[in-house]
Length: 207
Image (cartoon, rainbow, N blue to C red; front, side, top):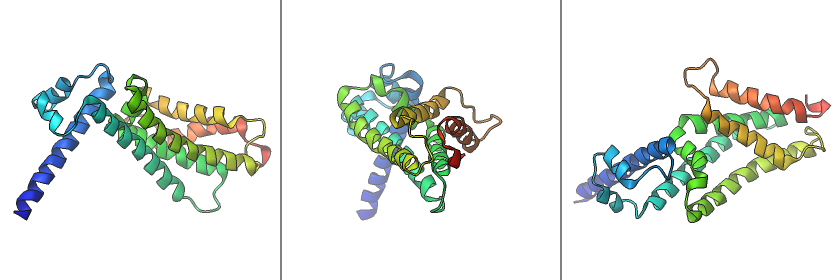
């Protein structure tokens, strides 16, 4: 009986994962408004009503995708930064964070691109849930930038909010043009993007 129960739970879990994967791919390609539950069901050769066994609504489905995408970015960025030596420079911290962000964004593309590209289309309640996670993520960048400025590595005249939004906006925009078979790796692209910004904000001691 225990084995049978485990098998059922495993099958339910796998089906739920398949639904999330299919939904993320469709949301990423066609947008939240352009994707109906029947489209997701058709992609899985399921009846639309069967989706309600796993998710109460389209809103709940996209919220879980949004959450998974954003949490994946946070976890990846934290891991890349924590791998650095303790005496790493401010620029090295930002480059590591950018590498983690791009890695999560481009390697788990459907989930993260749904979180970024479709955010404005999502229902207000879903946006609010996502905003809480996004604020937690942006506060990490805020902390690193404030620390760098306090160390004297970023010029006092630099507006850190605009800087943070510019860096993250540039990284997110990579979704529009990145090609997996291109000449540059994800890490190289992150280094170049941070390098462009760093040249205009860094003090002499940090260059």
